[in-house]
Length: 162
Ligand SMILES: [Fe+2]
Image (cartoon, rainbow, N blue to C red; front, side, top):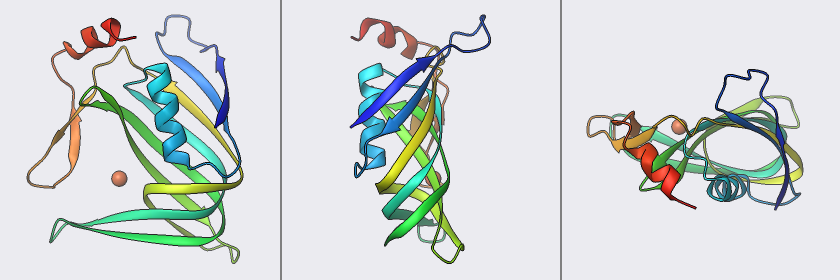
């Protein structure tokens, strides 16, 4: 599904781990990243990437109705930017990813990413800050799962898992 390499962080005092990933052609990006985070037990972090896809599904939350509107684009597109973060929800990695893609005519589309299928390559950088407690809690006003910085107790579960 992917190849990866751990890279040394330049800051020796840092607890963070950093990985370079190359996802295999035709895999679904969110699924591959979730698999990687589960295997590496990454429960807080940051994601950056570029690549190319043949299909992408985005989700738009209408703030007036709190209803989701999903839309799929099936065409060859370049990923001009994939940006995301990793937190923890119910003991599992929770990915929040936004994607911007350029089309054949060089216009761009983008939004909150639900899924995207690689057609070409996808190269990513994942920073693991799992020494930080970053959870999610449902916010009734916005309907969003917002950050919950917790009380630090979540860290304990990280060291007793795997
Ligand atoms: Fe989002």
